[in-house]
Length: 64
Image (tube, rainbow, N blue to C red; front, top):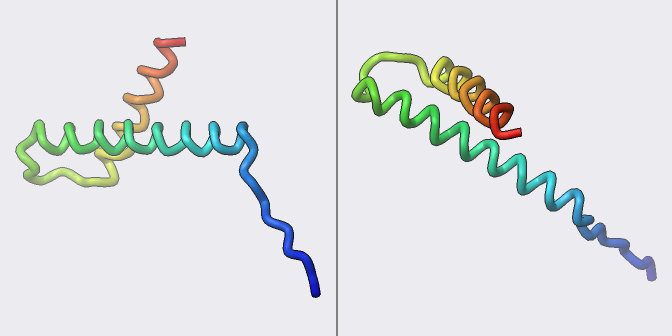
C-alpha cells in the first residue's frame, strides 16, 4: 500500500496566489470600466485589457 503525499500550500504560495487573483480582478474591473465609458460600443477587449494592465500597474507603483 503506497502512501500518497499531498501538498499543502505554504503561506507564501497562498499569499502569492491571492495577490495574483486580486491583481487579475483589478485589471478586469478597469477593463470593464473602459468599455462602459464608451457605452460598450466598438473598441477591442484585448486593447481594453492591455490598457487596464498599464493603468493598474501605474496605480500600484504610485502606492509604493
